[in-house]
Amino acid sequence: MPFTDEQLSSIEKRREIQIETRAGERRYRTIIWIVVDDDEVFVRSVRGKQGKWYLRALQSPEVALRVAGETIGARAVPASDPASIERTSEALRRKYPEGRSLDSMLQAEILETTMRLEPS
Image (cartoon, rainbow, N blue to C red; front, top):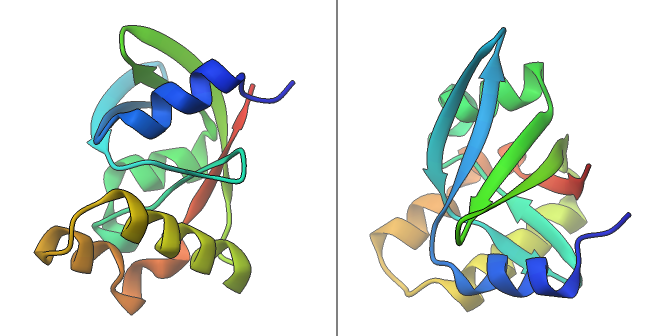
């Protein structure tokens, strides 16, 4: 079942959201940037392969998005193929203002941490 239009709109409107990841029974919430491109949702770790939320999502891909008071279940799927990386980079450029924060999300060493979030 895909994300609803309402969920996609809500995700796209928010500058930042919380992603909830797990390590064993413990849950963690991290504020991240998120983008929507052609009805698909993408995220990327600004800390690259050292990002704790990213490492937890690799180990336990069932995550939750906390958006405008709603919890949306999702599955984090690595999307390090060139097309997904470019789509995510372009969506980040469209959504976020130019500056150091955006530049950090476009650094070559973190591009392969791109993930697609699929509804669960």
